[in-house]
Length: 227
Image (cartoon, rainbow, N blue to C red; front, side, top):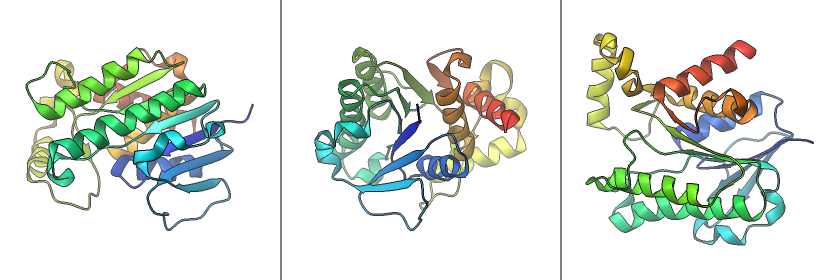
């Protein structure tokens, strides 16, 4: 059976890396990206589907049947403009994708949340991430893989002061992120994309269904070794 992939969040840091990675390999016969406006790229295996995320559940079921669904959606409270809009992007849209994956028997759903995701957290960001994890788990999908990266490194459009400081700290004192603290190690967007693909292709080699930064990095390394 030919493999198909669906990517939500293709214009983001990790989503963009996923698109490049999946099109650079032959694992999928078709890669469909759900976008608000088309990306400035073309490829024989790429389908760009312009959608309204508020109406995801109107998408045709054939798109999800036996597909690997990658959810790289995410924003920040500042960028979203309000708590309600942040929750819509980071909870509402992923849950819509989860329901579609369940209804039409997707092969698996792979989603990026965040380190510290916890529905009981006092922090709004972490609480929303924890809620989406728990509610996706309650859907009892065929396969659900949750990726909890620490600080994501990459060429962002916007400047984030806190992230810049953390990057400098990691560059100067990498030993602080060893051993038990390895889950706090910053990770590149490319590594996350590679880790997600390796789990999708070789899920039996994933030791757990919730993967933190050091486990994602290990999955990425395994993918590169196979190439």
